[in-house]
Image (tube, rainbow, N blue to C red):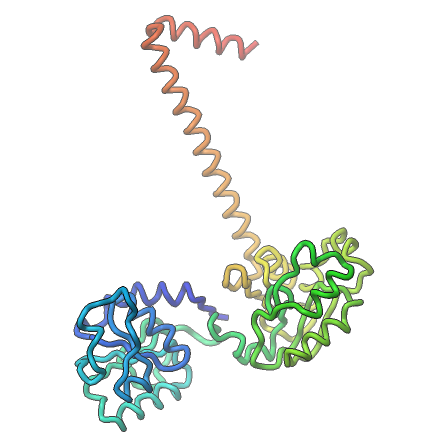
Length: 342
């Protein structure tokens, strides 16, 4: 599974804009996701921005109050070199449609076509592909509409809706109210294979009612069958329960809200997990990498603390030299070391 976050998208653009032709004077985005990429490119190059239909109708987007250059106030037909951008190409259908629109408008002569992410093979004739990403691939800005959901497990709290606050999470009336009125976060545009939550089984009716009210379609709802939230906390069953379900079903991705649980689910299930907290895909051996990062961080902190201690010792020693003189200072420090050794 090849995943790209919005941070990845921005990094790819920032490292690639220097390769674009210098005579580009307008950036145009193909709706809808292409507008995200086009906006980042236009900001990086400090150029005007337009959406594809607006450009073909002779309009560009307002530049805002901070940009007063004359280049931002021109009519759309005054630009000489136009970069038309999409975020990605898979089959090439969207890019071909855009190229046909541009050709029908008689604008092909001044347009270059660019995609940030393209497949390994060429599926359509474009001028610039910033990065080639193998299949299967999923992007942060559209994964809730991706067909991967049809073979995925999704957490509920922190993914489909907000987590309960401390006061709401009382396993009583406040929690029941939360279940009925939880604010949606990401509503999937496709049917989800499995919803896997550490909510208690006794809250199934409230959970099913909330899902139905939001039009969320799913195959099966898995809930933790323990009597109370206190018992769930005692067992520490959150990640283990989700991993058990994930390992037992034919799913290729688990979407989890918390990084710590994502690492645990990946380790226990042996399958990849998308962490919403960091927007990275956690692989089954990620706990080893995580432990190594913690070890290195601890070592750096110890080294810095040791360096700071030795630094202060050097400063104190220089001050004592000035006040007492070198011989008396060395004698004093020697006596102190002897006392420590007793």
